[in-house]
Length: 297
Image 1 (cartoon, rainbow, N blue to C red):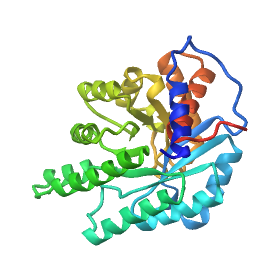
Image 2: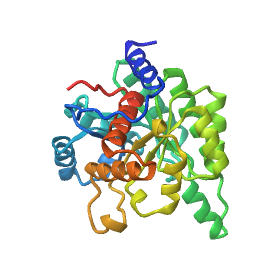
Image 3: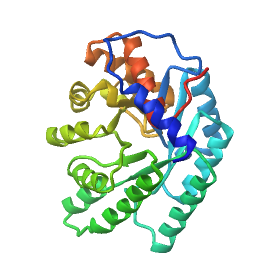
């Protein structure tokens, strides 16, 4: 195991020690919040670096920059180099798009292996299953082949297992159960289900496995997400924006930015019935531990 992964595992063990009730902590010098899922590459090119600079100066400790495909992965690698220690790139293939040919898949997998072998800090993602594409096709009476997407997801799950890396998942409702089967088959320890939605049985299965979820700004106005926050343990939770995806409610008409996670943390505190600074600290530690971000100032 590399020293990088040992550090991540040590932080994970520290944060799994029993808690002695809500403890308030001083604001970390590097920031108070993490955006654990951001498509920074999907913002207009001229907005990307200013977006990140403003987020970090405003109190965002770090972001996980998830990728859509190989070109997206390369762009996120470049951004991570410009913001060392603050942008963690996640490399993969987003499932809500047509599948690439086998040669393109192999090229992406080889590229990720080279990046890992070079000692680069990274995660696997965004990967998963095409729930929205599939259900739209089915509603329109069109055939849809899910099996090739499952096969591709298994390649990324196996990669995450072999490298002992966190994996960022797009898997909701019944697709989450299929994904859980793959994670269990390949003994993946660090799985992050972003913007998760699913049945109570699936939620209990994820909790039992120790898998993480992240909460988006729609927690301020979506009852389904509020109920999820009430049910899911705080110690397995992170905050995200999924930017540039736009939100409704109090965020209608606004550009989605990483600092919106501060509102997410505040709502989580309200729903959990704990002080806001205690929730912020726990969510901060969760993301730092899971993704191996430094907590030093």
